[in-house]
Length: 346
Image 1 (cartoon, rainbow, N blue to C red):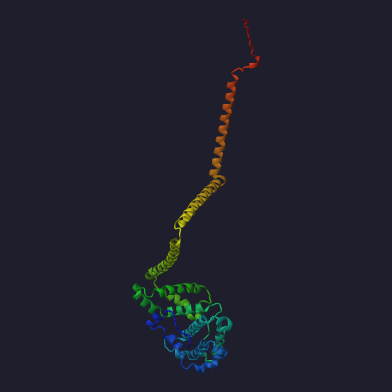
Image 2 (image 1 turned 180 degrees about the vertical axis):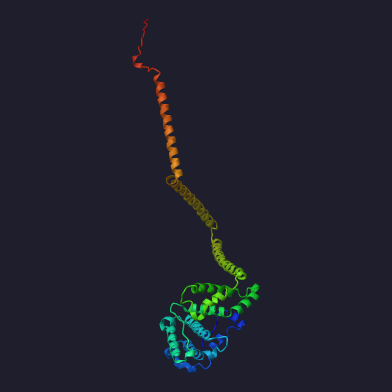
C-alpha cells in the first residue's frame, strides 16, 4: 500500500506487541485479485494510487476478516470494530495528504458504496455494518481508534506506564489519551450519541477503565508549558536584541551622536506631561462623580450651603453694626459754618 502506515504512539504499542491487528490489516499481498470490487474508484488509479490500493486491501480484509483476525481473543464484534477503525483511519491519512479528495471526489461516499456492495454479497456470519456518520469527522475516527486501543489493552498499558512512571517517558501519551477519554466519556454519558458508537462498547469500557494516573505527569505538563513559555520569551528577547542592535548601529554611524539622546529626552518630558494631564483629568472626573452621584457629595453640598449661609449672616450683622456706629456721630455741615473776617487798617 502506498500510504505510509504510521500510527501515533507506535513505539509504545510495538513494545507491548499491540499492533498485530493493524499489521495484519495493512498487509497488501495478493490484493490485486480484489480489483473488481473497486470499479467506482478505478478512475483514481493514476492520480491517487493510494485510494485504489486501499480499496483492494479493504475488499480483501472484509471478505477474509475472520482469517486475518483469527486470534481467539477476537469475537465477531471485535473484528467488525477493527475493520471500521482501520478503514476510516486510513482514509483520514489519505485525505490529509490530498485535501481535494474529500470535496471534489467525495472519496468517503465511494468507500461506503463499496462497503454496501461487499456486505450484500458475503455470507451472513461475515456481515459487518459500517459505523460512519457524516457528523463524525475523520480526525474523530482516529480518536476512536486511539480510545478503542486504550480500552482493549488497558491493563498492558497501565502496567508498563506505571512501572516507568518516574522516567516520564510515556507522559505525552498519558496526557493525550486522558483528554480523549474525557471528551468521549461526556458523549457516552448521554442517552444516545453518534459519537459513542455501540460497536466499540465504550459505555461498558468507561465503567471498567479509569483514566491513567496523571499525578506523575502533571509536573511534565507544567515543565513542557514552562519550556514553551521560555522559548517564546527567548524569541522575544532575540527580537528586542535585534532592534537594540539596529539602534546602536545607527548611533555609531551618526555624525551627531547626541541627537538621539536629545530626542529621547524630549520624548520623556512630553511623556511625563501627558501623564500629569491625564492624572489631573482623572482626579477631576472622579471628584465630580463623587460630588454629583454619591451621598458623600450631597453631604458636602449641604455643609457648604450651611457654611455660606452662616458667613452671610455674619457679614450682614457686621454691616448693620457699622451703620449704627456711624449714626452716633453728627454730620458736620461745612456750608453752614460762618466765618468772621476782621480788617485792620494801618
